[in-house]
Image 1 (cartoon, rainbow, N blue to C red):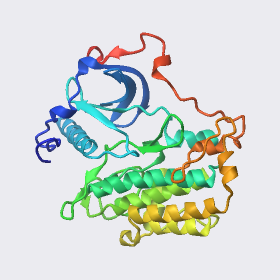
Image 2: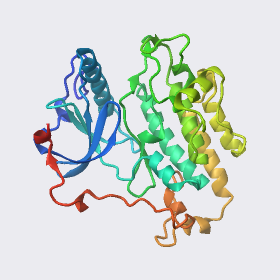
Image 3: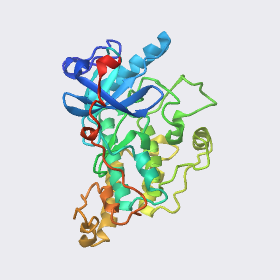
Length: 354
């Protein structure tokens, strides 16, 4: 992908020394997440609390090659972009296994946070604030020519104070090219753009044209979820949801969403990708809506949202602290984990584990 401080191409499969971590200084602790291709652990690197993503190597030569290519792409992209709403990249190594190290966010995933709240919904200002965090992260990626392709609540992580969301997991991210054909049927079906899914014209693994607007569609589904705190396409399996969206133009109902906000949601999930707004436009629409709902309230209530902390909500990204005075006491607020509070000896030298 270039020279200098950039990570080299997947073909070279070399890590720039700037990002190469020393496995001897990496310690791993409890597993905090697992996907089809990797496991994520709490850990420490040079006395810093980190998240350690260990990539499964695969069994066949073809599978190993695919995993290495995916690892190389993810490292290359993480090392190129920095933003307050993107999980901070710390480094990576290829031996003894492929590992990606990022900052540790102890607030948990947005999915888990919303599940913990159900059946209650987020305060609308909080929902829009979180949506702004996500949109800003996506604007940054797209400005670097990167498509995420897997935007969903599982890949959105909250900070320890539950006020900010950061986007994680670049495992499916790709550089956008007008000439390159990209693999179809990537991402998670329920949040996947219709143009990514086809059982009629494509077999899995074949290539088709699409662009960064696939992320705008996924954002619309996430925003709908932030507003309703319900699973989108409820009652359908993941495959049924994707089929309905792609071939029947089915979308979750936007009838009970405030008109200005509904316009944002419905414009982002339009069938024609060219008619969807870009994330710069999405941010402006969200800010205008946030100003509208904030101006209808006096300043005093905003300052009394958390009587115990006297916190004033930030104007651009109000956090979930706004909910603390109104949430049911039976719904326990997640306690931010502190790696220092773990029993001594819970960490193991990464090199000895592998």
